[in-house]
Length: 353
Image 1 (cartoon, rainbow, N blue to C red):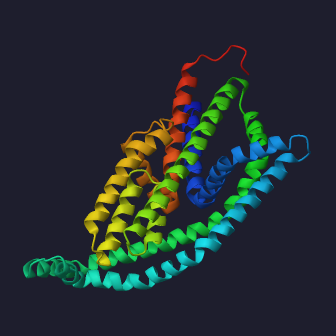
Image 2 (image 1 turned 60 degrees about the vertical axis):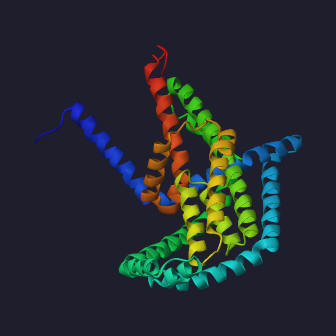
Image 3 (image 1 turned 180 degrees about the horizontal axis):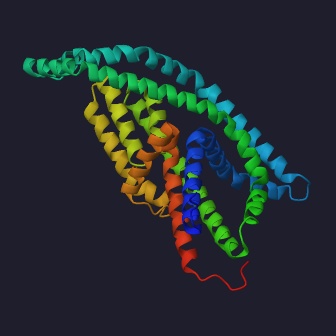
C-alpha cells in the first residue's frame, strides 16, 4: 500500500483544509453575513456606548447599562420616525406596488411610445418604430420584470434574518474586547504583535467606513427626497429612500438608483425628464467629487475597478446583502494581505515560542 511522504501529506492536508473552509463559508454564508452586520452595527454604536460609559465609570456594570440606554434611545427615535413618516411611506409604497403591473404592461405592450411621444411631438413613424421595438422585445422585458420581482423577494427574505443584528451586536459591544483578548492567546508570542496591528487596522477601517457610508447615504436620502418632492416626481419618497439605500454600493449603486428614478419618471410620463436628468448628474458630481473625498478620505485605498469587482463577486456569492458587504470585505482582505506581507518579511525573534 502506498503512503504519501511528509511533503505530499502536508500539501493534501492544506488542500483539504481550504476545501473544508470553503464549504463551511458556502453553507453558513447567511449566518456569517448576519454576524458581519452585527459587527458593523456594534462598530457604529461603540463611540456612543464608550462616551456614555465614561459618565458611569464609578458604578458597577456601567457598560451594560450604557448599552441598554443607547438601545432604548435608538428604539425611541425609530418609533418616532415611524409614527411621523411611516403612514405616508406605507401609503405611497402600496400605491406604487399596485401600479407596477400596469406600468410594466404599458411598457411591454408599446403603449408608452404613443403616450410619451404624443406629448413630446414625436413623429408618427418614430412612435410606431418604438412601439414595434418594445413589442418585439416583450418577452425579454417581462422576463426582466419577473427577475426583478424575485430579487425583491429574496431581498425581503434576507432582511428577516437581520432582525438578529441588534441582539448579536449587544454581545459584541458587551464582550468584544474580551473576545479579542481570548483570540490573541491562540497565537504564538511572535504572532501576537501581528494580530494586534491587524485588529487595530480592522477597527479603524470599519469604524471609519461605516460612519462615512452612513453620512453619505443620509445626505443622499435627504437630497433625493427633497429634490424629488420639489420637482413633483411620482413616488418621490420611495425613490428617495431607494437612492439613499443604494448609496452604500459604490459606483454601481448610484447608477442603478438613477436608472430606477428615470425609469419611473418615463413610465409615469413625468413631463420634466430633462430637469430630472440634470439634477441627478449635478448631485452625482457633488457627491463623488466634493462630499465623498472629504467624508470617506483615503482610508480604503481601493481602485474603482477593485470596487466594481468586489460588488459583482459579492452579489454573485451572497445576493443583495453580499453586495453591501463587498467593499468592507475587500478592504479587510487588502489590510490582511498588506500586514501579512510586512510580517512575513520581518525576521522572527530568536526567543519566539
